[in-house]
Length: 184
Ligand SMILES: Cc1cc2nc3c(=O)[nH]c(=O)nc-3n(C[C@H](O)[C@H](O)[C@H](O)COP(=O)(O)OP(=O)(O)OC[C@H]3O[C@@H](n4cnc5c(N)ncnc54)[C@H](O)[C@@H]3O)c2cc1C
Image 1 (cartoon, rainbow, N blue to C red):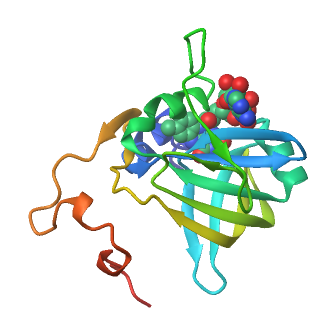
Image 2 (image 1 turned 135 degrees about the vertical axis):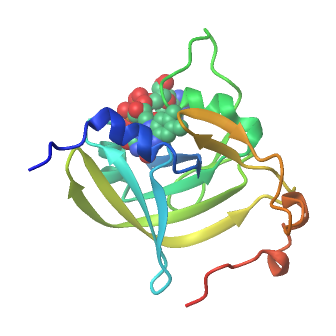
Image 3 (image 1 turned 180 degrees about the vertical axis):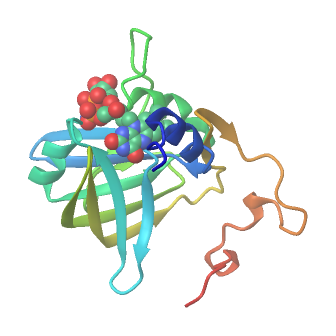
């Protein structure tokens, strides 16, 4: 039998799956907690479901459970500092500027590309992570066309060149213009 793959190599390989970056927020009473996450996906259309994978030891778990809801805030390229900050990777003495707006599911982060407000539908235990499935209650999209923050191979990136056949991503913000590639 071959040896099990090395977890570090697993992280390197999965890091080649380029993603956007979100800040997940939850409000338990007066307290808001926020955490950077890219293990996020769209799950179902009927009903509308999304999923975020949260490390078992993250403080976020307790907030998600108590709040019973969350918001996924999809970061714009101007929000790299916030991604670092809400991942606990901020070295400077003062935090970067940010503002949370009370919203459906969890607080909405100003300046994000878009936000998805959810109620926790169920939690699936998955090894050293927990999958929070969220029933989508609200959607918000920035009025201004913004570019996304990307994460690839352990580093932040910007969207520079659209594919040859596509238009500039900033031109495709009107709802009727956004392409849905995959119809059921
Ligand atoms: C690109 C990227 C993607 C990641 N993806 C995932 C993922 O999908 N799943 C995962 O589990 N981990 C992920 N992480 C790691 C995760 O973000 C960190 O491990 C995080 O610190 C764990 O969350 P925590 O709830 O323990 O937060 P903490 O470490 O407690 O908090 C994170 C930071 O945010 C600050 N903070 C939180 N809420 C507030 C608030 N309301 N006001 C002001 N400051 C606040 C805290 O002070 C702290 O500095 C990712 C990290 C990066 C950089």
